[in-house]
Image 1 (cartoon, one colour):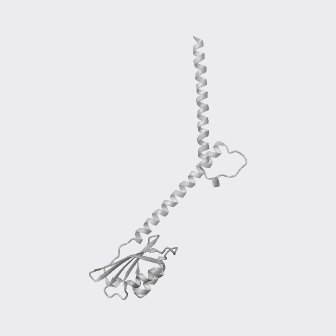
Image 2 (cartoon, one colour):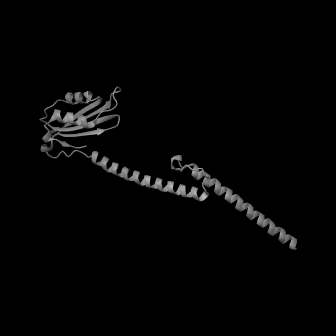
Image 3 (cartoon, helix red, strand yellow):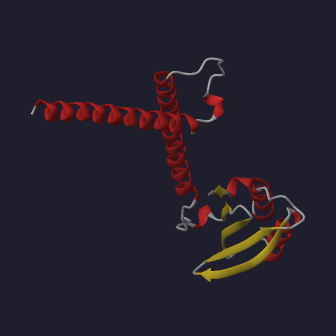
Length: 189
């Protein structure tokens, strides 16, 4: 009877040793995978092989760095979203004293110019289009409509192939000079 218990006990120890060895091998493999995904610029050059604890500390430091970076980017995203909401305001077309109103949106590969004036405007639409073309944009569409005593203009323009981009602030300044004196403008952008 003792032989059976001794054999069972020995095989039990052998199984535990094997399981522990396999667990350690598996952990070592996971640590190697973890360290391998850390960019080399975060690894300190050393001649000595890093211990497993040092590798884990290094990975933890890198993860903290990534968390900080994510928080910073989230903050920038929220700030950009708030800024974008301010840029995409709708015209306040309540009174004539606020005329003309100008909004220029940078669309990346082009711009959108939205202009609201009174009926007593002192420019022609082709002049606005000329300014855009002189600044390196190719007008794709130009529309206007009359509502009560206001005229709404919308001009969509793309960057010409030969140009790198269109500078919205420069377009704004040129249109401002064309359409009305400086003191009459309210910039919405």
